[in-house]
Length: 402
Image 1: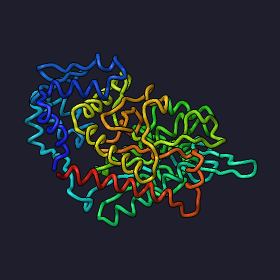
Image 2: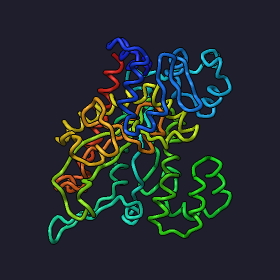
Image 3: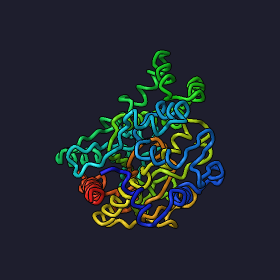
Image 4: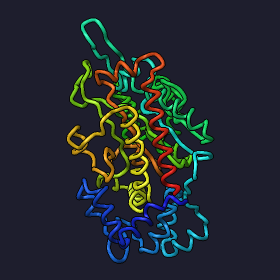
């Protein structure tokens, strides 16, 4: 079954014209920044964004395959073959992304968020906490370790069902580059290695300039290395060309500043693509990516997958689904989707990864009970999170194949 199904279904179920459908989609998933909306024209003739115009025939031809076309190929297709786009799509035999009917043979990418490893690395990436349970007992958590152990358990379940599973990093403490942050610090001093980062568009001019400033580790990680690592993760996933991508994180209570004490708050939520800003489409690369998100079914399918995952996590772990008023960033930096607990958010991976994805935040690590359960030996809580992800994926696949 083609992943274009939700898009075609929407046209039929609600008797919408393409113009109405995409206008509604623009309003639903991209209305946060009105400057961006002003740069997009959706009318009776088709869709136009700066430097790119498509007729409705071209939109219909491009929508099923745009997520399978590399950026250089897409740039050439839209700019060089502009007058014969439909012809060249047919001629070049660009294939649709088809949805397997079961997990067997399905390609699934899993990104264990952050890096983890020793507590010092958790401090460097600002993704660790020491929580005081009482005057004599403390608990330490490193999010990158929790995500990796969860990813391993989920991979085992998916492997057993015949899925082809890829992890973006191979161990705690390792980045998606296959080395630690501190190894990277030394390696980037080598001009040949730095040139390779520049050549592969993994580091910006600003990033190169900042390397010469002898920055503290936390600043260097946040301002330079983090974006390199994110770009490498997205590139690795897109090269794998998965049917589904699962991005695993664990959340915290934003108002529990310093994360030195526990909180009674605990919610499940997930993020999907959308909510881009006008800055995202200042470059041709950004405009091509926005066009993909607008006309492909990637967002709609991501909402369906994420909804199934959120529901299963909530039911299995007895964690309530978040509401808009439960976190300030949900109203300030996100847009609600039609699914409960699922929000469009402009994160590096939701923006850069092609295809269907779920960016999950299953619970609050700093919750009174969760922190104890997560750090227990052979944590049953982590196992439940992995099982809930698995069951959500299965539910999505079963539903999409009918």
